[in-house]
Length: 117
Image (cartoon, rainbow, N blue to C red; front, side, top):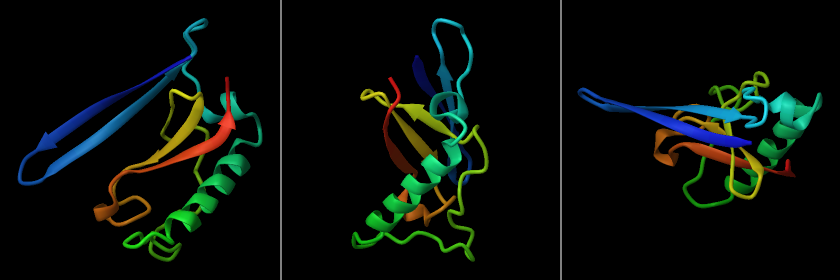
């Protein structure tokens, strides 16, 4: 398996960066999604870990995530959520700046504590 990220940056009056994530099974050439890697319970696994890590991270000074009413995290939408596989073989779920927290907190990344290979 291999993961790679493509960064696209646009600068006009303000800078904007978008990341594109690709996770490929090198033997078959198939692009992998969360369901492929974590099974049918992928949403429960990922949501549980992210809720736990948001609660932990919120205890740090200056960290404030958006509430549900403010458009904060309410669970991943589907198996195509942005993610990559880190060097330790764990899935890292990614939310772009402003998606679940103020821009001052930057891009949010959550390591899912499950070894996938």
